[in-house]
Image (tube, rainbow, N blue to C red; front, side, top):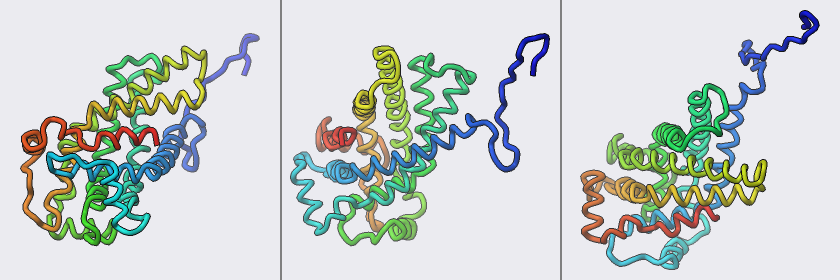
Length: 290
């Protein structure tokens, strides 16, 4: 209304009236959840063969190196095109809520840190912490699916019929704790990975916004995402290898090869050298470009 000849504007507050949100901004987290879920499913399905190749490299416990062609032939020898996508169903079930939660929580944390102000003014440490916390929460919330995805990707043909059968067999033969094998390196690695990924992306994007004087072209954003992901993978890759080896051991109730995260590192370096901790890094770095 008007008072004393001047217009008084009141900021509309977001609230829920029992049926819907009355402020469009209040829907932002849900839009992030949906867009993150869709983007996660599409991207992981498109790179599923590379992802499976990476896992085969990681569990190849020998000083000799598996080549990319050997890995491709191994998958092709299993008979059908489906063999290239083994574990992708679990990955899609996992990545949708994980990606969605990561970005939604990250968005909330940034807004909290900035008191609802301009998040582009956040420093690197704040972005790293925000990205790491959101990534850790998202990863931990769906971890059993991460373990099942790995088992389906590296198990001999015929070991598991599908996601449900894999979960049932792991639970009955190895116990519920087996569904959380590799959680320690996963949590240890997701903080530097997610933090470095999101922080690098947002910092480089901000530089691009300043360079272009506005929103940069799509191809620049894609390149920025690829660069951020590659940097994050280099930082955290040994954690991923340790996690995969812990997840893959004890299959069918067999005796475990490793006693924990440190034991994997020690035995891997002793048997395969320091570079053994980076087995599969090449297909892993190919994923952002796919």
